[in-house]
Image (tube, rainbow, N blue to C red; front, side, top):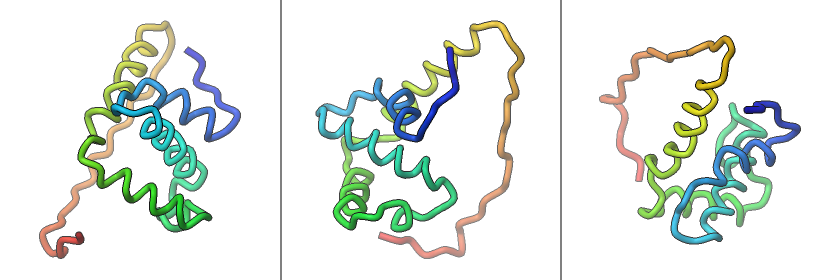
Length: 108
């Protein structure tokens, strides 16, 4: 499995094209959002989108009950498992940073 990508759009298509979210437009939106976020991974959502309409669409997408973590992560897990079946050396990284959100107010 080739893990070399020439740009963020190519990566997003490879990583998320197998996500089934019920509508082709929703699936295209996921790829567009992922590509934007991959171009500035340390940034904020408003900083990742030049066009206000694209930012609004990203917020709407993320608030859509039909879009869930499991639907987004499942194809990634399948791709990772398939890649791990190929011979080679693998680096498994785990973030064990403790997070404590008890003093933060809920944002809606």
